[in-house]
Length: 144
Ligand SMILES: CC(C)(COP(=O)(O)OP(=O)(O)OC[C@H]1O[C@@H](n2cnc3c(N)ncnc32)[C@H](O)[C@@H]1OP(=O)(O)O)[C@@H](O)C(=O)NCCC(=O)NCCS
Image (cartoon, rainbow, N blue to C red; front, side, top):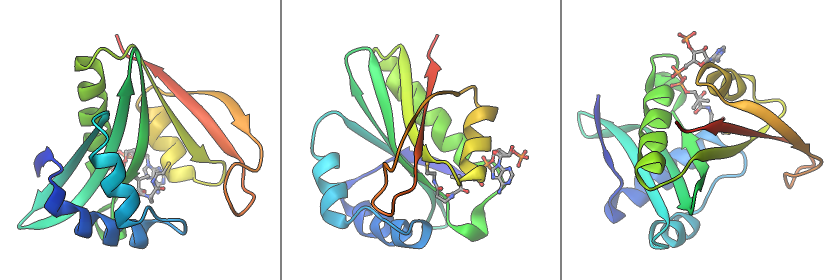
C-alpha cells in the first residue's frame, strides 16, 4: 500500500469513489474547493495505479475535522481505512491540532466501529443532520 497526499489530478478518481461509497457524495467541485482552501489535507492509498482508499482533514487552530474517508467495497476490511485515518491524525497533530472531530451517520456501523477502535468517543448527536433526515453522531479524539 503506497500512501501519498492528494494531488489536484486525483480529484476525478476521488469524486468517482465518493459516488461509489456514499448516497450523498462530494462532487468534484466540492472536493476542489476544499483541496484549494489551504486548511485541507488529503491522503490516499494507491495500488498499481488505482486509488484504493482516500480521506481528508481540515485543520484550524488546535482543532481538526475529518471531512471524508472512503474505501471502495472490494478493498474493505484490510486496514486501509485505519491507515488513512492514521495519516489524517498525524497530519492534524503536526499542524498543531490537539483534538480531532468527525460526524458519522447513526446507522453506519462499519465506520462507528472503525472510529471506536481508533480511540474516538461519542460527544453528542445532531438530530436530522443529513439531507435525508438521518441523525449524526459527533465523535472526538484527543491527539496527544
Ligand atoms: C468505514 C470504512 C472507511 C472502513 O474502511 P476499512 O478499510 O474497511 O476499515 P479497516 O479495514 O481499517 O477496519 C478497521 C476496523 O474497523 C472495524 N470495521 C470496519 N468495517 C467493519 C464492518 N463492516 N463490520 C464490523 N467492523 C468493521 C473493525 O474493527 C476493523 O478491524 P478488523 O477488520 O481487524 O476487525 C469503509 O467501510 C467505507 O468506506 N465505508 C463507506 C464510506 C463511509 O461510510 N465512510 C465513513 C463516513 S463517516
